[in-house]
Image (cartoon, rainbow, N blue to C red; front, side):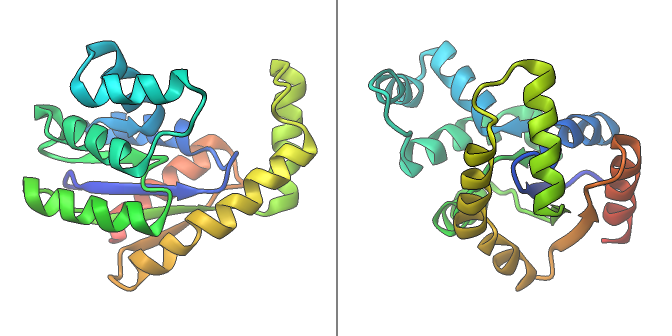
Length: 191
């Protein structure tokens, strides 16, 4: 299995972060998450990181322009040259289109979109259980359902965007962590 550019999609609670870490280890490529990129850019005090910090300190959402700038900084790093796994980015069609332009400009590309499929009621139960175990006040049922709604409206359309290029590989996400991980590797090998 050769290294490649992978976009990992899935509803909140689908296990994207967990699976991205495992897959990155197996492939020997970096797991790049939006949150990690933002924190690293702020810590490095890069120009785009300073912009992001000012926006976040004001309690506002970071704009697509800033997120794309941070993604460019991260994807230009040497460790991403042979492949990468994007987790939590892109989130919208506009971000996906901007990402394509960015990747073309720096000589990289998306080779596969792994979509972790889950059922809403199962995810609600999973996240409520996690909230109970971890004491996460942000994971109440109303918040979870709102995050699922936002995902359906803003991020799910990316499945069609990448499917139009025959890049989507769906992986059932309600199984155990090892079973989902094995299914992801199998989907990549079949791609």
